[in-house]
Image 1 (cartoon, rainbow, N blue to C red):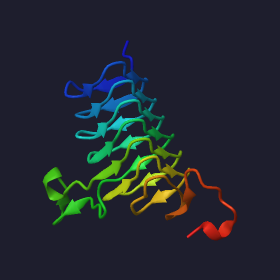
Image 2 (cartoon, rainbow, N blue to C red):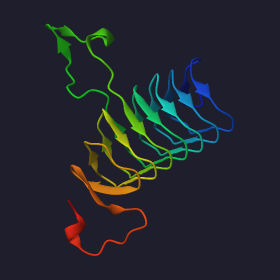
Image 3 (cartoon, rainbow, N blue to C red):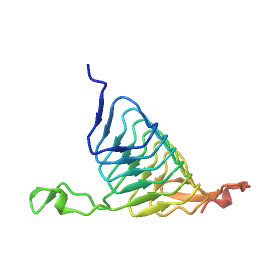
Image 4 (cartoon, rainbow, N blue to C red):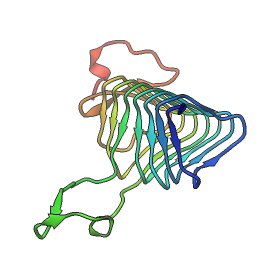
Length: 167
């Protein structure tokens, strides 16, 4: 009986990594003490740091680097192509027809459930992305962002006094 995990031989796993069932991992790197939830896919060349939690139903594509101590909520989607197309010159696109765009999630950041993270951006250290947000630009360190597109609400350690703080 299969344990319902697809982990290819080229995956680099750190020590004490927890892998739920129903996952697809190929060509990626996962650091020590990280937990990967059910129904997660992590593609080749993606890097997940130490002490991270990647919650269920999340998609981490090629070009994404997640540093240490990061929380990724349920059903988060990362994107690595600003202008995706199925075909080039009338034929199905192949890997050589496009360039991977990168995304960096800095140490200690938290990404809420259902967020979509576009490519070519950085989510800063200790930043918090609200559930359901669509991140289209860099998020500064310690910023709390939410919405579509995600906007800065305030910074970690500051109190929000009224709605005028939303930009």
